[in-house]
Image (cartoon, rainbow, N blue to C red; front, top):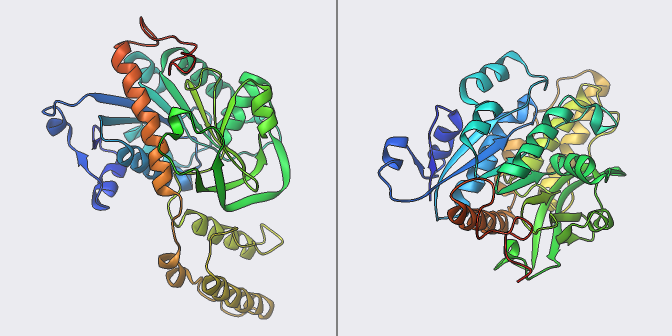
Length: 356
């Protein structure tokens, strides 16, 4: 069912303009449909703050038709923010203290940009541990995305991520390795997922921590894994929430870094993502750019308009299906619980009843 615009967050208006169903709270109050309250811990940097909101809001809103979704964005103290981002957060985000008092049915934790070789040196480290520890005891299920997965795997399971040398960047084919798990019920057994990262948690690391790998790729590694009980914590290493042009926008940012002298090499193309025609256009742009830089001439315009509409999305429908399964199980469990965290009839060590 629809998202509920329970605040003045601009993301609601943006999604409504895109055709997403968004209800004002007064209309939602008249619907005899159960509410689900989902927290979104947005740790992304300022430039990606709004896009990350829209991606996860969109994915949740499209993923399941069983409830009205109240999504509660919040962030962590200590993350560097510019004035515009601080104003946005102060006006539209909620506080962790407020959410602890009111309770959540589920929690999504985004990735973050890092500046230190060790995650424990990042400003989000201790505040994130506090959120995760609270959620583990008080929220039905927690979904960790990319960097959040790496952080939680380190401080809860002692499994440190490993640098891969080169960046894993592109869209990769994945396979379902456990077809019996409810999160991948009725999902294609082969599907694509975007990735964008330098580090990974390997399949062996997940399994040595007692966790279950559900989806993996020969090129991209593990995408989806779950906690020992099968549901309390869901781990993503990929980015199923990405928009069609997210990787292209990232490529454009890397080109800007090259022009500014912030990277010495021109960025490679994301794997398995661009058509041959688009690559040819970008190669021509690359040649013209190098000539302009060498000769001190006017820089050519980045050919974004020629390429954006030709990029295909090969992952969003499966992302909706997995999120829909996740939300459906959250709904079932919280409907039985009525309160937080687990009550009579729900085994906290086996919430999905997989051992039965």
